[in-house]
Amino acid sequence: MDKIKFPLSYQLYFNRNWMMAPMDLAPRCGQNFNLTFRHLPFMEGDHISWALRTSFYFPGLMLNHSLQARFGLQEAKGNFSYNYDIPLPDGFSYLPRNLVKNTLLFDYRLPLFYPDLSIGQLAYVKRIHTQLSADYLNVHESSFAPKSLSAYHEFRFQFIQIQ
Image 1 (tube, rainbow, N blue to C red):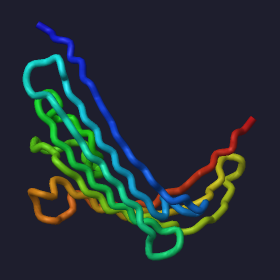
Image 2: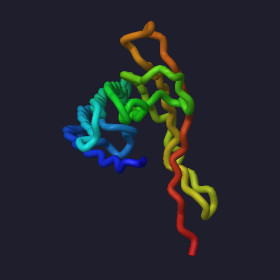
Image 3: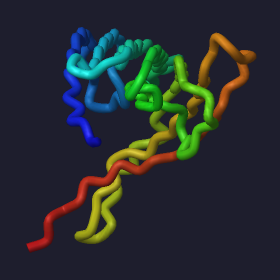
């Protein structure tokens, strides 16, 4: 017998970020809080989920650099047991069977240079920047060793419409 599952979801958030200069990659300073609560009121049993996501931005070591610290905490029971309302570590397409209770990210972004390069009529390269990240998973259970480390470069294109 199939039952209709009618989940209800509530969300409360607060964001405060300082304005960015055009060359900044992220807010210079900021705080972001997001609280989510879900439940199935018309089903028997305990089917609830709540999640808290926070993100803090700090100035980097030099001008236009940015440091982000992001923490997510969640608890889920019943039908919501394997739903993830918090950001997961980069590169995790498959997670082990243990449940994710919390995640922590440190992310440092810095511009490499602003070439202002035109690639014919196809694209305009405005900025080349890099990002260094360390992701942690279930910090309360494990050593303080990151689950994923990443560093990558990124181009910022502004495509020109050809008519």
